[in-house]
Amino acid sequence: MTAHTPKAANHGALDALASRYVDVNAMEWEPTPYPGVEWKVLLKDEETGLLTALFKWAPGSELPLHEHVEIEQTFVLEGSIEDEEGVATAGNFVWRPAGSRHVARSRNGALLLGTFLRPNKFFGREAAE
Image 1 (cartoon, rainbow, N blue to C red):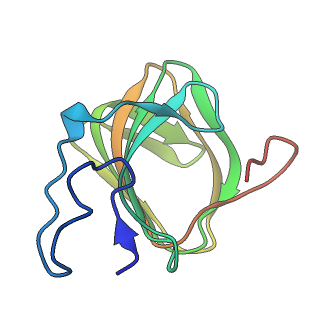
Image 2: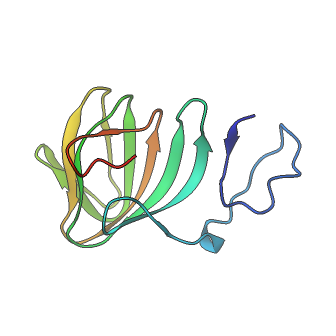
């Protein structure tokens, strides 16, 4: 199995079909390549590109222009995120089709749960990875 939780200390010895319980509060926030955006990777599969992560956006933070290679799903737990098409606020959900492009921002900060089937493609000199 290639899916794993990168920072989980107790998953190494589990059976292949055992449930993976993740103590999210025990995980540290880690910086992303984008200033003001941190994350906790909950599930990652290097082979397929699947990623589920908790994201913390500082007020005024922004993700530069990027493309969603496959469907992207975001549930806003706190605060809000926005782009040129609209705003997603706490308790609401937004998903974007494969091939969609945008710049995402958070004016007042946000806590998000995001799921990606494949990694985003970033454009311009700010592109990381």
